[in-house]
Length: 216
Image 1 (cartoon, rainbow, N blue to C red):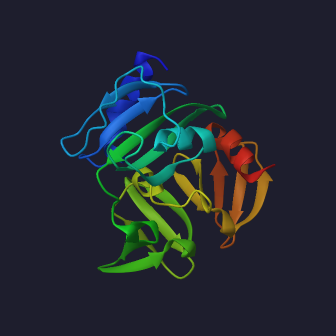
Image 2: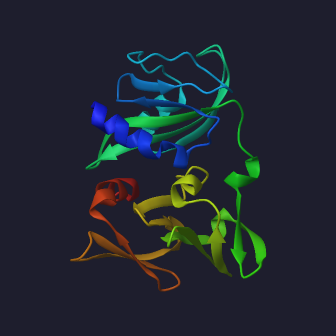
Image 3: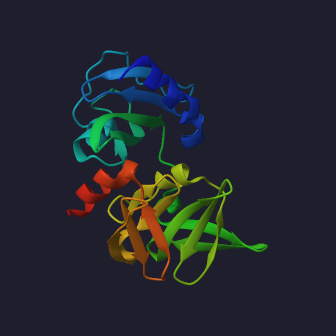
């Protein structure tokens, strides 16, 4: 991972992670960048090897995002890690990890609150068919209603289970349980037909990861 790649990541990093988080960027072997916060500092230095058991290690190993409490026996400080692998053309190149002093609200990993007209409605994640970026807002379609969430797609992705939800396009995250059919398509790599009839593209950027994750 070169300097330009790191600079591009840092341009948008604070749109995705809380401002009080420490940020670590790694390749597949070692950390290449570290920015501590006032709330928590693991004393990571560029060039430090990635330790087994850390959030970064697990994201690289599993190839998907990891949200997990990490015990103090690794860095001497316990922390809550939110790590996302950097995947290019289907190959894991590194990871970006947010380091927090404590876990965000546990309800965020089970519910999201959407706004419809002037009212707000908490909905369970397992009721969500898909999420879509629309004019800088996140549109959420559920089994019974639809509305908008205040967080952007990348922020919400941190709290969605990687066992149920998958990013298939820069503008879409889908719930695998509601995919009715996967079709080849000439304009994108695949088209997903959802149970409600919505057709969602799988872009070339996410195609390899999508195929590998679903095993086809």
